[in-house]
Length: 172
Image (cartoon, rainbow, N blue to C red; front, top):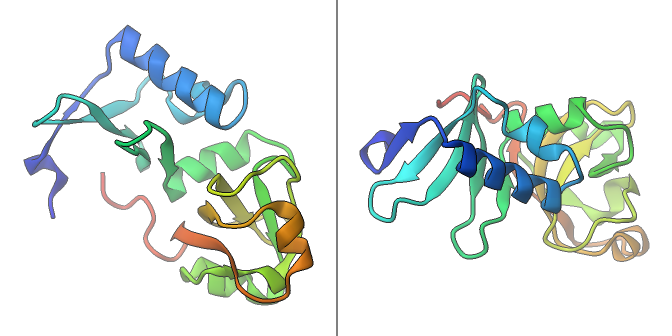
């Protein structure tokens, strides 16, 4: 589906830009708005509702915005920006190197493969999946709390949404 049929691509107004940055600062960390919504960003606006649905940068779609609660849904290009601007362990789930390639191909992350996780994360948060050397493998949604992930040896811990090899960010 071509997004241009349903959305208008435009530059955000200063008020919209400030609001989008405030949402990112609240959801991720103070200062994330400047990283995730750069000055040259464009937004996809719904033709039906007039609401912002995604932030588009030079690398493609950086993040979508969930309609129900106006929270960001990270895409791989946006995850790359956040990864480059933060120090470990912020927003990160560390995985064993032997499963990192599977995550890069888009596979979900199981609890048994998690080595370390940012203790401040909560279920349903957007997380950066990185290997033991802090190289970004993918981005996804956390399903369990950090203590549950480190305790359990079975089950999916993170649903991988976008990854390096899945073509993250090629549309735009």
